[in-house]
Amino acid sequence: MSQHALLSAGCKAWRSLSCPRSELRLDLTLGCGQTFRWRETANGHWTGVMRGKVWTLTQTEDTLWYYVYSHQINAGIENRLKQEVEDEEQLLGNTSKRTIKQEEAGLCIVMPEPDSKEEELLRDYFQLGVKLGDLYRDWSTVDPHFKQTANIFTGVRLLRQDPVECLFSFICSSNNHISRIQGMVDRLCQTLGTLLCKLDDVAYHDFPPLQALTDPSVETRLRDLGFGYRARFLQQSSQTIVNSHGPDWLQSLRSAPYLQARDALRTLPGVGLKVADCVCLMSLDKFEALPVDTHVWQIAKRDYSFAAGSSQKTLTDRVYKEIGDFFRKLWGPYAGWAHSVLFCADLKKFQKLKEENPVLKDEKTELKKKMKERRQDRYEEKQSEKGKKHQRK
Image (cartoon, rainbow, N blue to C red; front, side, top):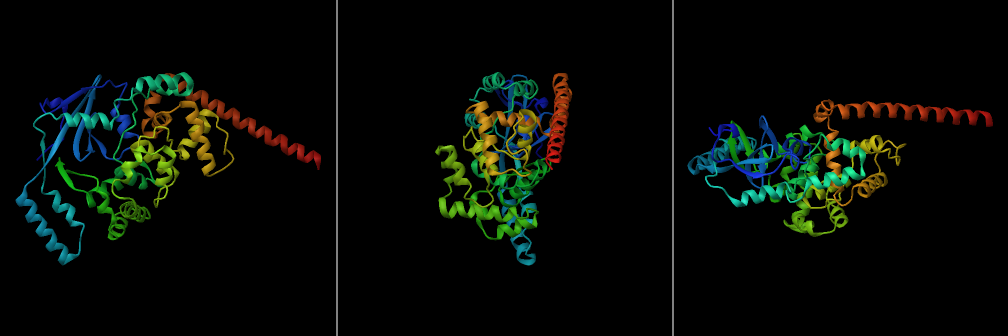
């Protein structure tokens, strides 16, 4: 049985490229909710699917290490299992067994020779041509709050994901949290994607192509897997793209201006402002795109005293735009990258990093004090207004 690779095992198949932690931290970048295909399979080792290949990544202080598995199917086993599945489906009408049977045929082998294309894929995926340290310095100069956060949350990079995978993953994100989205994306790939290999009994599948999502039966199958109303959006959006635009349409939006690309995405079922901005930022090279949800809205109000819409309970399109414009003016053309650092720093799963740092701990205490003072000021203002109204009566 093939196993997940470990750098400590010393296998010659590991490849490397120079990349300090200040430019990339795998745990923060792969675990902050911009991608849902990676899992920590051993301490500091992340395994996932990227560009049709299965990878294990890890890092030392100044080096990024990668290990690529190659898909290998035994043709005789595959044909036998395929016939068994078809026979069972005719008798039982049960399509769920297809995945189980296919997985029995999946094997993994290590790529025998280094491939320069793999390093290119990795550099492109992590956008290593962007000098993150320079951006952090620029943002820290204009933003004291960012400067404090950056001392701990270094190396948070934006990924350059496949637009199809990014779009349909974020359609799943509606009213959802990271771990549940990961589960949905996994089930989507297991049901409709191609089996790539198995490692330690874990099956890795490629993301399904657009055509696999267009069939009308897809909605019912995904509803049965717990996708709820998102199942309809996934099927209808894929159908709209294939029938009205063509399979290369999403890729072509990389060359379109930001607002034009965002408006085009919003014509798809299930795609609102936030999902469109996520796709623009994380797969279409629109670094000024800034996804805003209630989480980011709270960051703006709490850490930047952003007052617009503070009396409203829901995030309107107007407030969404004002928050995005505020941060774009503050951080400049790579505002979406800076936003991702603060979003990552505010996730519950990474709060331990703040607690371990005395500076940020003191800042948090001071922030709570200021918030308490603000609440007290608002209370006194309201009481004063009530008193004035009473006097007029």
